[in-house]
Image (cartoon, rainbow, N blue to C red):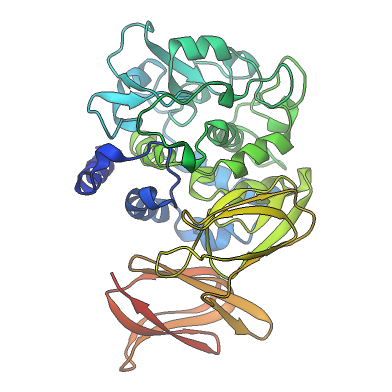
Length: 430
């Protein structure tokens, strides 16, 4: 049942996984091996009418409704066999410590802990959206694997049911030092983004927006009603929630357990898979700015708030650009990691490098492509025909009138990419 994790562990052992940073971001150098395995499950889940190319075109309650429908049709928590007690014996697989068999990674602290249940003396189950603020352990939301995390008892007690935030009287996960010898602070890891994405997930799966809701609906999971200073708050504000979400991108820990959550109960957290969707859904609640770039960015933010984000920049060969130019924001760039930190957004943002042009210009529109391993991804397509040819002219893959994104796995070799009227020679080296 846990074949995804067997594959991950087997793959990672080849690359000395005992040295893996448990908070390495998926696009950092250490996270790439795990990310390449994870991406196949991610893309397999979002298919048909739920494919990313369609999600990318939606926003607000329309996008909420599409994802809410997907969650309702794939989540099995309302079926027999799923309950609060069962979680105690599943964390060893879903939150497994890749460095130590029989242990899991505890939420908030990142500590490695024995998964043996000792009636809550060492660890217990943390409702990230507190039970007292709208969750009941007798309802699906109260025992959803994506919502209820294993936490050291002492950390759970100090957190209690305080709303998350940065102001006085709010709980900030950064107040708790991450305790794991495999954690490297250079990766900017924190649990703030994890918390934000869980709250966003709960709202998406169990909440309502614009009349859109599914069979798992819980009328207490209304995000915008749970912001601020009331006793029922779960977050200080939507601005702080999105700030944490964007400035702490999904980590290796999150992508591994997102696969495990799907194995266990059938659904995933889409805000781990595609972080930018959170901004598309909540854009009417905050001031937003568009983001454009001529290089691959992970997460693929196309929109930001005034607080900016952290992301990683990659060239098509997997290396990072050494110099970049940014307009519309204050930024810091680490060329060794390819990490860009945006803050104080004042206008629409452009991120460019002259080292490698990966944009195909067509009638004033910019079609982008990038290569990860042996997967070619072409995006920003606007009703364009796409085809991949061998150098001898044989068609390898094609599609007509594509909107959004088109991707294909190719064998090593040289190819011609045609997008609309534009042609480009590409090289797959893996």
